[in-house]
Amino acid sequence: MQKLVAAPLLTLDHIAVAAASLAEGLAHVQAALGVAMPAGGKHREMGTHNHVLRLGDGLFLEVIAIDPEAGPPGRTRWFGLDRFGAAPPRLATWIARTGDLDRALAAAPSASGPAVQVSRGGLSWHISVPEDGSMPFDGAYPTLIEWPPGPHPATRMPDLGCSLERLDIEHPEAEAIRGYLYPAFDDSRVVIETGAQVRLTARIATPHGVRTLA
Image 1: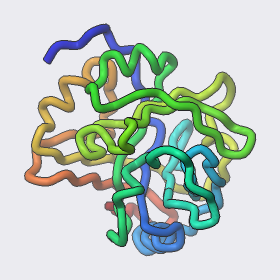
Image 2: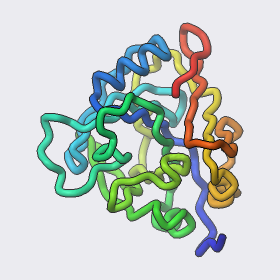
Image 3: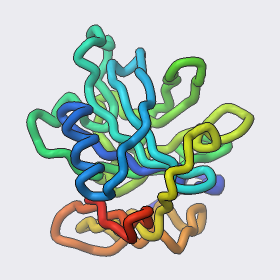
Image 4: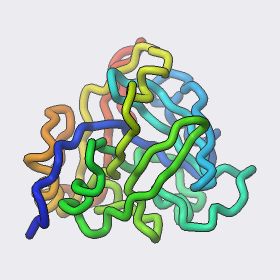
């Protein structure tokens, strides 16, 4: 595997549950964690909406789904939502932030980009979204994001006493994923292992004890 440039440092930013509807996704998280997620907002460019839950400093959980009130976005939606159908909600992928998205994409798998600009309310950022809306390595490799300068969005989210303890990622090509990530990414909470199928599982400390979200 040949990398074009040295990748800038990557930091775990958030994890994302995809769902056929926001209500289904929220019910899935509440059943797993025993916590009701605060509202997020709408993404006009993608025709989606979300709820978000703080998981620590600079880290959060997102539930995202197609917004039935939004018009067609004029492009394929992110996180594979156009092909999600009526599948049950699941922890679909993770997102890593960088201070130089263009350089990070140059060192990432070719299926990761390009970078697009997206907004929610008054916040605007750049994020990697393939033109077909897919996720690299089916979500086992992170979507890459670059926030604007200033406090991380998680600092504005209420602290409900939840924090991420571990994120387990299984994929048949785990070795290739690790090859793309390291040494740019090093977080002991994220464990990437070989598995027969793609599966993401998060262990999250909550006011009710440590719970598992998949």
